[in-house]
Length: 349
Image (cartoon, rainbow, N blue to C red; front, side, top):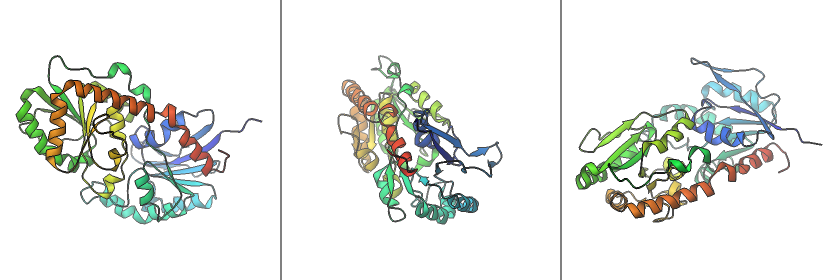
């Protein structure tokens, strides 16, 4: 007898097109259309969120994502818990330790009690990194570490950059405005690169404009695309050769995933990454990227090395792309998500 599909109800304030919804739930779910049925229970008509009173009642598993626990949803969470169904809290950021400069700090502080209550009462928590699992361990020791994975089809081989024969070397940074403080570390290194290489280097900021612009640095700033699949498909078309991923050292950033390394590498970019847990665990220095600590001099030297040596840059980019696509593709590892959901729902693995 064929086993019926696993039914999952998802409660999230993220739009289905956004990165967290896609990376953490929808892209893995789409790999198992014949084994899983799911409902995105929270609807948004452009002005308000709406939820059916029967949401979750027919599900085998409830998943509450990220910022859904809040003062406004306490009663809804109580109702869902009272259904007696297996429930997972899915979170991919350290919402317990947002830095003072983070634009969502006030909202996170107001939701802290709801987050901790849900984390304690959930059957388990799904997270993107082992650091994040440890962060929530005091609230719930049951955590499934499900790494962020990439859709290989979004990064075709034809999109890989080649050695520029004309024009500048293009250095890319991609990220939301929440990373403005992280970018401060790049001011001095970028200024020195501009002084050394002049018009031979162009910086492109996709989604977050540094506070130190405009200035002597040759740069372009492009608006962020909130639609995740549009974002990743545009990333290779920026014409980049080198990518940057600075992070200020704090608990929030240490718990982040390596998604920038995955996306940059899948595009065929050689990157310089913060020497912190998101990247130190996946980057092989000199082979699949370069790591730089908090000293601006380290960032200047790493960036200058890649700008000045196109052969090394291309070799590093090729190795990084192979490592990302072979080790972190949905085709290879989406089964980890399905195994987690089946275990949480009491299905045999």
